[in-house]
Image (cartoon, rainbow, N blue to C red; front, side, top):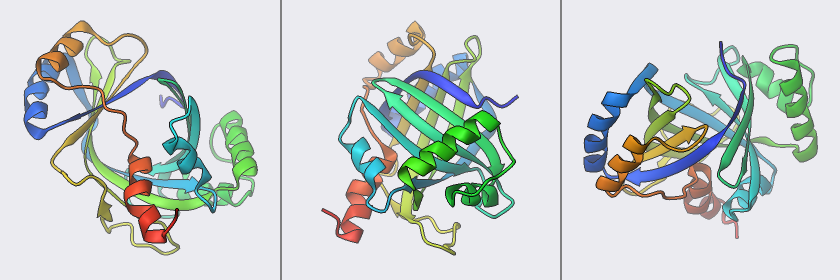
Length: 234
């Protein structure tokens, strides 16, 4: 059964391909790759006309929130997508989402009523949309391997590479890759999501390999390095 609500600690770490290869040997003993294996994650970030939500996030406040549409295939009207409100308070991430056809997601953004998805979360999304009036702004995609703990299923680790972005526009070709967000595209972004403290075997392995926590926002970096200069935003 799909989980529609999340509350967990989230930490990010950058590593080189060499560090990843060594850490992978440790992870294989304790983690299982999820059913998707290596997959391409496609996101459309929704924001106000002046990119208020992304700009606020870049300031690294104690609390921030954003709205995105996530798909595991190319966006079409009948593609099943997740419409998600992501909030973060300090190191704790909260996510509320519904799974609906992309066409319904567009209708929801337009303030129209839909009948699909969890009613309570749908109402929360409608309120968020009434408050901010967001529209589809940035397309961001990357290649991911996700794992969960063999003995601790709530422990989840994702490895992301090849992060790309482009401005969203009507009729855009979602098969295009966009511009690379990070200059060294061989590096790996690891995100650890856990309900409590990280297991000792994991912290010991990262310490041995000199893998350190590095705050990083994919959408924030995409906006600062690519979107804002392209639009000549100050």
